[in-house]
Image 1 (cartoon, rainbow, N blue to C red):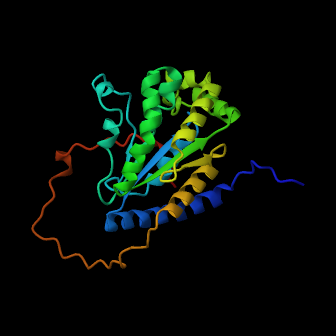
Image 2 (image 1 turned 180 degrees about the horizontal axis):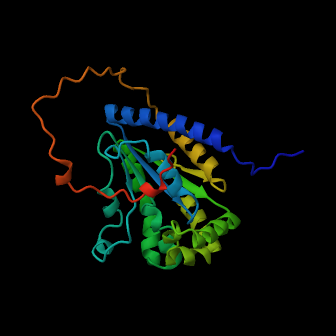
Amino acid sequence: MAKSKNVKINNKVYEKELGRLQIELVKLQEWVKSTGHKVVILFEGRDAAGKGGTIKRITEAMNPRICQVVALPAPTEREKTQWYFQRYVSHLPAAGEIVIFDRSWYNRAGVERVMGFCTDKEYQEFMRSCPEFERMLVRSGIQLIKYWFSVSDEEQEKRFQKRLTDPTKRWKLSPMDLESRKRWVDYSRAKDLMFSHTDIKQAPWYVVASDIKKHARLNCISHLLSLIPYEDLTPEKITLDDRPPQRGYVRPPMEDQTFVPDAHKHLSVTG
């Protein structure tokens, strides 16, 4: 009997593997900090493709001073008059930093192109200049990693429908998301053209199959770890000395402080 291609990983196995990978991400972080390495990771893909969930799993165990997430809003009127890449450049990493772009300069090749937010001239200029811009980043010492999250039409629709009924995800359904739902083919063509111009040797595109979110997260993190030649620089085990006696301090009366109310004490299980 042929195996189903959509067999999902067991939750316990997933959590165990995710925990193992997150430990490796912490090792990666310490190596980046120690060596002064600079990393930029771009996350692109269709709406509801699973980019945000993967970014969350990558960063939740890491130091936000070392690994930063950049998710820029729509450009202001002033920013629209700047060199297109200018507002992204200000977020590039210094030595010992990792910057993750949750959508990036590729907005111009995707949503701006499909929705008509840029002119043909601006789009063509982006396609010409983007590869050179990225080669310049690589030459400057930045390791540039680009991920495209690929989700099927059917799975994207399921996720959109789920967002309608989940109060914690309703905010994810923006007017732009709803419009993109109607333009599947337009976005497909835009992505194909984008790849044909920007899938360069110095910074290739890596496609993450994301119909099964847990698989996508583990696969992406494993691949990311494989791309960076980090070493385990975990410090030696720390031994805590006995705390010295605390003398000469009297705590102010508890009644003099304003505490947050215990709003959920009625939910406590006793006995």
